[in-house]
Length: 555
Ligand code: DON
Image 1 (spheres, rainbow, N blue to C red):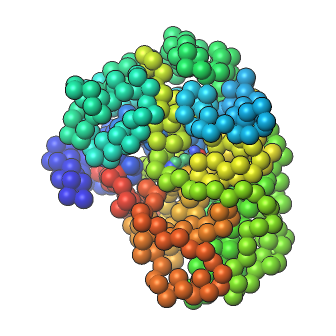
Image 2: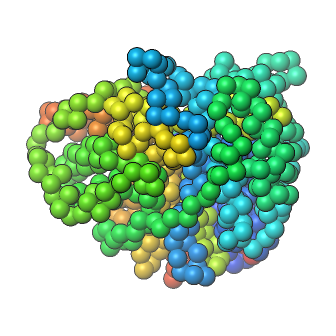
Image 3: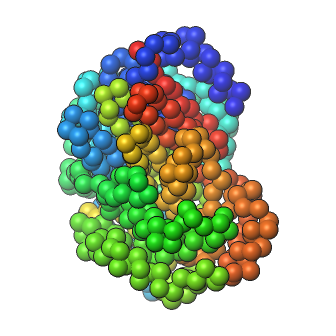
C-alpha cells in the first residue's frame, strides 16, 4: 500500500496525469505501469480503445505470468460514437491437428498434465490479432504509438516486484531453458525483487507486431519462429493455424436486473450466461428482501445451478448448439428452482460427474477503462495458468499459453479449476475452449461501471458479488473489495475467503447441509472503472488483494 502511494506521488510529481484540471477518464489495472501506459494515452488525446492496447500490451510485459501475446482474451466494449456494445473475441483456438482425445492414453484415460505443461497445451493465440483489430476498427492513434510503452518497458526493463519474484520462483521447475534464461539473475538464480527485468526478445516481437499490424505474428518471420519453436517442443501448430486465426466480433448479452442494465460476454465464455442465470434466480427468490443468512443460502443455490448448466450445456457456440434462449428463459429459471428449499442445501449428485480439487486461480488479468468520449473497455486476458505452459518460444520472448486445459479433455474429468464439462466443450480443430472470463459493464441512468477479475472458475461468482453490491449503492471500492464466497456445483462445497462469513452464520449454513471450506488465502484480483453521468466524475477501484492501481486522468 505504501509503495502504491509513493508511486502515485511520484507519478503526480513527474507527469501531468494527476495535474488537476477536468477529469477525462479512468484506467484501472493489475499493475501500476500498465495503468500508467493507459493513462498517458488518454492524456495525449487517445480514446479508451487506444488506451486498452497500451494497457493490454504492457500487462504482457510486466505481468508475464498472467497474460501475454501468446494468449488471448475478451474485450467487452462500448463504442459511444455508434452507441453500441460489442465483444471482441480474441480467445485462443484449438490447433487444426487436434482431436477430441488429444490428452488421453490408449485406454482413454487423461495423461496427467499433458494439457497443462509444455507446447502441446497451447492454443492458437488471439491477443496480437485482438489488439490489431481494436486499433483498426476503434482506435484513433497509430498502432505503434499505442504499443510504444510496452515496447520500451520490455526493452529498457522494469523493477521486479515481490509478486513477480514469487511467481517466477514457484514456477521455475516448469520453465524451459529459454524462460529460465530470461527470468534469471546474472548469477543464474530466479530473478529477485528489486532487480531489473529486461526482455529483449519480447521487445523485438512487440516491434514486429507493431510494424506489421500483427500480421507478422500470423504470417511472417515471427510466425515462422513461433512455429519452429513450438514444433521443436512437441507442439502441433501449423502455418495454417496461424494464418486462419480470426477475431470474431460478437453481440454481447444484455439484460436488465434490479433496475440496472448488465452487459456481459456470450460464448465461448460461460460468464455472461452463468451470471444472468444466477441473477435471474436471485430475482425470482427476492434476494434483496432476505436476511443475510438466507441471502448466502440463496447465493449458493443459484451458483450451484448455474454451474451445473455450465458443465452440461456450454461450449463454443460456433461449433455446438448452445441452448442460450432456453437457459436464459424465465421458465428455465423456475424449473431450476423447483427443488429449492430455503432450509436445506440441494446436492450436486444428479449429474454424476467426478469431483476435483481446486487450483488457486492466480493468473489472468483484468482492466477497465472509461474515456472522456464515453467509450468503455472491460477486458480480461489470459495465458491460463501461471506463465501458461511454462514454455517461451525460442527467440520470441513470448510464453505459450496452456489454455487447451479449459476444454473438457474427457467428459466429467475436471480441469485445473475443478471444472467439469461435457461434449459441448470437447476439443475440436479450430474450436475455442470454454472460458469463465467475465468482463462486464453495468449501467443505469445515473452511472456506469466496468468490472472483471482473474480467478479461473471463481471469476463469474466474484463478478456477481461485486455487481450485487453496486446494485445496493455501495461504492466501487466496496464492490471490488467485498469478501468472497464461491460454489461451482462440483465439488459440492462452499469456499469462503477469511472473514467472509461469521461463525454463527457458518454454523447455520452447515445446519442446512452446506459443506463449507474456510480458505486461508484471499482470491481474485478485480479492477473496476466507474463514471457518474450527472457529475461527470470518474472513479475506480483496485483490488486490495493485488498490487494494481487506478489512475484518474485530467486534461
Ligand atoms: O478462460 C478461463 O476461464 C481461464 N483460462 C481463466 C484462468 C484464470 O483466471 C486463472 N487465474 N486466475
